[in-house]
Length: 275
Ligand code: RET
Image 1 (cartoon, helix red, strand yellow):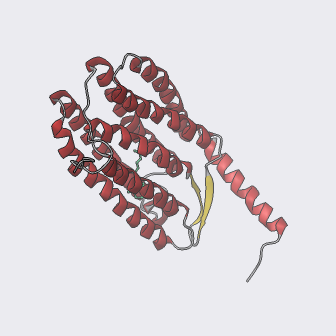
Image 2 (cartoon, helix red, strand yellow):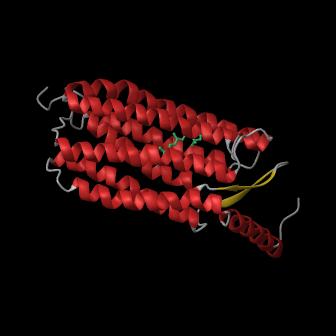
Image 3 (cartoon, protein in one colour):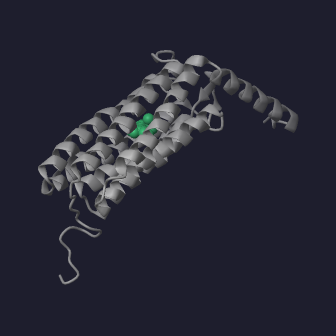
């Protein structure tokens, strides 16, 4: 076994830094990141302004969760641009792969906010919201593991499969439990929930598809369609829909309609202290 000396190790780090620096100086890749910093910066200001008229305390909670989505996103994209969350994975037989792993990391914070906003709108209870968020976080963390695994190529796909299994739980909560919960809400809330639900489900399914066809997935077999910049653009465009459009529709609705959203409270449904 060859143990790398300190010197050899620092040469390897230097090469990795060079690769990251080179990748980030590609204008096409940089553009895919800056566009979202600009959009999310605008979103943060616009949503704060739009949300100021919401009076109902529960609706305000939904607004706060929604405004936090672009806030997390700006930090996420700045970290990528700064190279803080971009690295190199050395895959045996395939060479060095530049990975924007910060995306998977920050989804751990942004996606629970999206789910909180959606679940609160449906008026769901704590148990169901907790279920969706826990499995969502598990999906993101195992997705990060898939991207960082260099031990063997097939192990990346094992992580991918595990992450997908957790994703299915999230989809089941949205399409099953929450779709039933929302039936006790106003017609207008139901209509908005229906739109946001389909927007979310369709766009979220796009993320594992991009992973599979992009640089992290099939590209390692020489069959992926997308290079680093194209993969990054695809994620950025999905983000525009899953975060910006989602949050815009929600905040606008809460500000304009001033709906009263009823909720099931914290425990399991129907259980009252006197029972
Ligand atoms: C990965 C790869 C492993 C398998 C699966 C994935 C799913 C990712 C999803 C991401 C959604 C992100 C959003 C971000 C907004 O900020 C990790 C790509 C299932 C669903 C909505």
